[in-house]
Image (cartoon, rainbow, N blue to C red; front, side):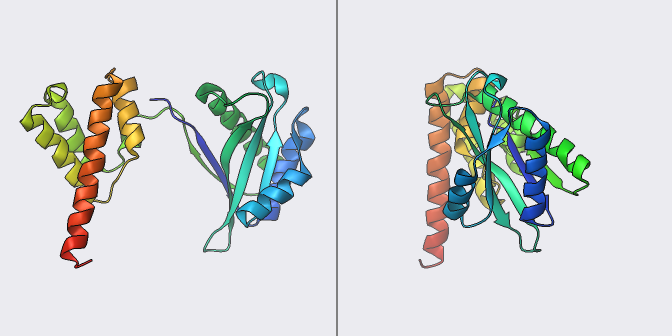
Amino acid sequence: MKTYAEFAVTAESFDAIVKVFRRVLAVNAGWKTSEKHNRSYSQMHGERSFYFSPPKNFIGTTVAVAFAGTKLSNGRAKMHITNIVPKESSQVGIVDYNRVVDEVRRLVIAAAKQTGIRIRENHKSGDWDLKDVIPGKTARTMFERWLAGYPKTFHPDDVQRLDFFTIALHHHKSKPLHYYVKQYLIENLKWSEPDARLVENRIIVGLQVLDAKRRYWRGV
């Protein structure tokens, strides 16, 4: 299943990460930043942020890569890609978005080695399988059992298996993003969008009812 790739960098300080970013700009022709946007983006997020753009010919249009900073509890600094913003079109397609993320990752890792700055990267590919969609093992097993039946018939037995999956999500606090469950059914299993949306809605309502039940017994 195709989804948007993610990339984050952790280092000793924001200054260390920004030094790596500036090395990327220094040794790669056409990559630019905007100090004005860096300041405004940092003010918006309340922590150090950074903004830079690859050459226009990289994906055929001008985009900006926005990194936002987070101060971690251990005192280290983390900066992650929050968005890739198009400047000449309404949106960046998922393929182009992931190409930019992968190239930024490659250049940042190379720049960190060149500067001798120790970084830790966190990268999630844009190609997801079922383990990415449903990380929890028990919930994933329940989902696979539901799929092994005749889920498109929406027979009561199959609906119950889907509900068992929802209960496992709630009990083990292993909630996936409902959008990704729907997209997995559509992209990987070739379900129609209406059928996949019915499943998504059933999961959403089931989780809401289970949350309400928990609050009820707590007297809230």
